[in-house]
Length: 68
Image (tube, rainbow, N blue to C red; front, side):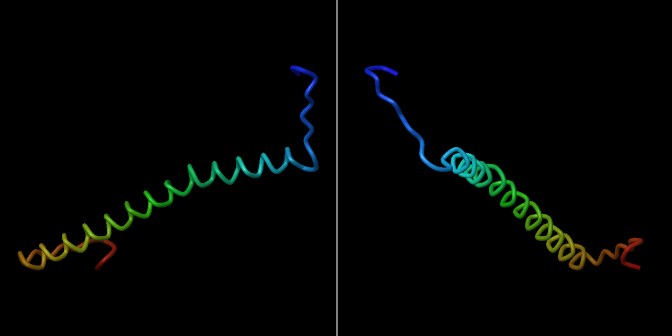
């Protein structure tokens, strides 16, 4: 250390640093991933609604295995 300065850490600072990094990492990575995933689900549902409306307007009847 220059000029004989010593930096001391007190208590559980290393654990707290790890917890802080984990929280920041979670907010930076997982939160946007959840938001983007939610937007994909919302867009898919909205597209399905519009598709059903157009088919109803055109008089198209689609039979699927799931919707017998």
